[in-house]
Amino acid sequence: MKLYNYIFLVFFFTVSIINAQKDKDTVKVKEIQQLRISPVKYNPLSPSKAAFYSAVFPGAGQIYNNRYWWQLPLIYGGMAASVYFYIDNSNEYDRFRTAFKRRKAGLSDEFTNLDGSILISDAGLESAQKQLRQNRDLSLLTTVLIYVLQIVEASVTAHLLQFDTTDDLSIAPYAIPDRNITESSPNIGLTLKYSF
Image 1 (cartoon, rainbow, N blue to C red):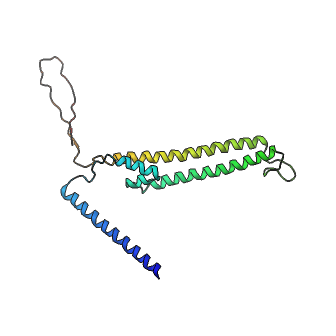
Image 2 (cartoon, helix red, strand yellow):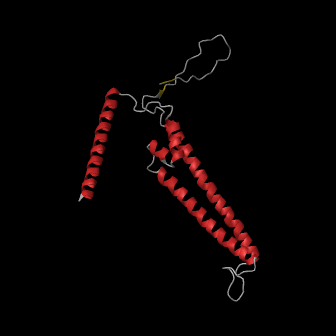
Image 3 (spheres, rainbow, N blue to C red):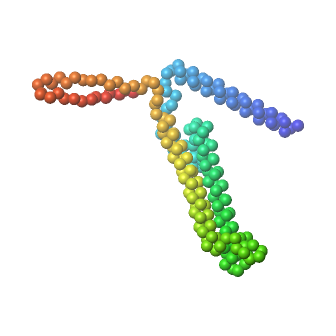
């Protein structure tokens, strides 16, 4: 019976915390709308934190940036596929390597039938080892590349999230006529004025 009590307490506190956070977020949104200020403030350490979190645990930087709904499946899917192919190619490489060593030692291997006929030649075993080793190394490189790219992506996203993208930004181009009439040819130019 005590287990049910603990589960109930955990559930109760979780729901309470979620509701408290929801009320707190609602108050913040109302304050922002009333004051008409930008909700994003510049934080120079935000990109560093996002990169650090991603380096410690892949995808944590995307969670920190609140951009995880479509990026986490890509990160974990890519890394899982790369690790799977690394393990598969490594196991196959070991299998062909063992068969090649046994054949060179004069023993039977899994690619030799009971009647002594050979299914894969020595050259075929060497070629398979070479190809499987290349595939294994490429899978490892892909895993490392995905790991590094998700760190860079978290840092760049944290930088870009701090830019002001409100509707108050504007560009007001205007032309200034040339007042110098004494010259034979008019001066032509373009001025671009922007304000924040």
